Length: 129
Image (tube, rainbow, N blue to C red; front, side, top):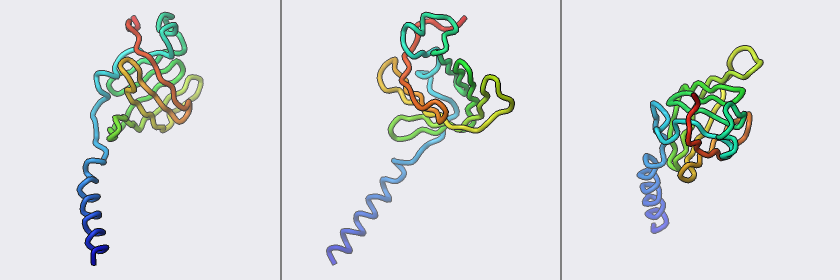
């Protein structure tokens, strides 16, 4: 009998925690992500460097690819996950992909894509002209 009660209490606790663990929709990426980022500060200092990435509310531009963010969700760990339509330099058409963003420290943003894996970018002080 005690085991049955313990199972019921455990199930009730898990059911109550489920909404807290759920993903939520976001209309755009947060303002703290918007701007120019790069592999490192040296990359920030070189206009047009291939290590730079520009992030807008619903778009991400790498050196040779662009992500048009279609659906953005937030996860309990602070990750923003987006389904996207991607264009690649030298390729025709668009493909579907996902991209994940997470602020890991002030001025440090983890960006992970299926194509390029992941990297932690640093915020650049200046923006592109």
